[in-house]
Length: 387
Image (cartoon, rainbow, N blue to C red; front, side, top):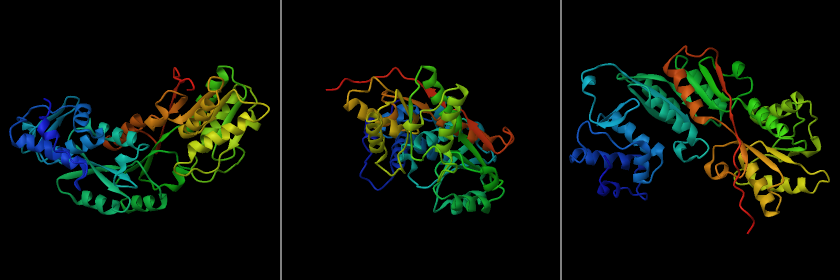
């Protein structure tokens, strides 16, 4: 049943109260006044988010709090309903809690991490008697300890969707040796040797992603493929994480397997990335590539922001139809979903689901790491004409 319009109008974006609390209060008011009857099904997440003008994660958080407080209940694969499940009254079985660990408490506003966060929420909702608790880097130890001490719940584990200080994170993991932790998304160099034994990983197969990009471009006849990366390809040890290194190594392996020599003069090191400058670096490098005597017929960028910068420069100079572009990640909608270049898609939802299964069903996976193969997205490109 759609929520009454007068309830939806109560949302105030200038309020000090978080949006999810306001959404929850609006739904609760509709329940208390009888506008929503017991056992009546609430609108689905897409409809609820659209009605209140909030993200799906915000709507999901509001529903989760209502369920935790006993005002609603969820039936797996059916939806959320008003009132408690009758068969659960008097049942003393404890609720399983999944903690989401992130650097910042308001992670839902990070567009890169949003798909992982939404995937965790979706996967947890498929499990019975479960709920999610958020923990940011500063308060993680306190939050985890509180859940360990809770009498009416059982801590299933902690899923880390965003980590900046791995030393601090691993210290937290070691503080709770009986609690399983799962790292999401980026691979970690020497993970098995460095991470505590109760820390597991669900990672994107970066090497495979680079290979897919290179193999596709070579397969359609490209031979002068430029590579844009923050680090020079010839380095044996890359600063920081291992992820860009693996993407490049996969790309080079595709050349080797196809018995084609890489176009090394077209490989460019962009330098380190900072907020707001990645697209500019892609455009600058593209300008330098077009100035070379031997120009590329394709450009592989190790992330979508670089690819967007390349596309913008090519479009502005009338070369966009002559050069194939492939990016990597497919996580930021306004950058990678506009169908102006191909990309290697990190499967965020599937990775999040694997992390939840890892914790909800111990023993389902062997080993401490899961590598998920990314998806090569070849788009029917929409390249607007220059105005």
